[in-house]
Image (tube, rainbow, N blue to C red; front, side, top):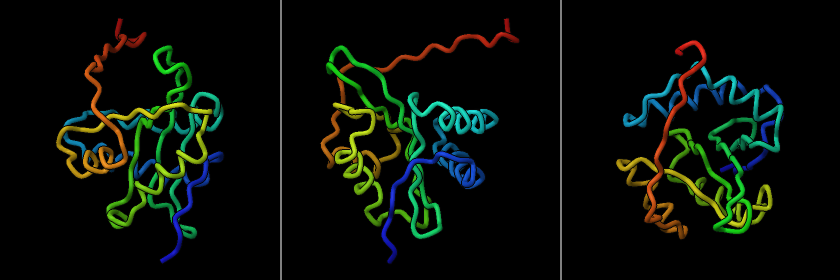
Length: 156
């Protein structure tokens, strides 16, 4: 089996593959309703402004088998940069091979954005991912995340 490598997406060469995986992520997560028309904008923005976040591709040889969106933010509570793993997806045919576990080892070693902590969300029904994250040392916070979406300019 070819080794999995993790590298930053800094050009649009794999855009179609990443867009397909983004759609697959939200199709699998029935608890989330997301408009995929904004996905290309996310890719273009993160490539153009890498200090705002990064797309990490999971590759096996020439094949892309997953991706993650990494978004940094400063935390007073943690006295440093918290790296939010905003999305993490491994293609179905590449799952259960240790890719997720190896990705978090990669983050621990590389410490993108000089992060002092990692944060992520997981859907309640995604038991496998929850088990993985807990086995890696992630724990539930007692605070809940609340969201408020601003109206778009054309909706006012």
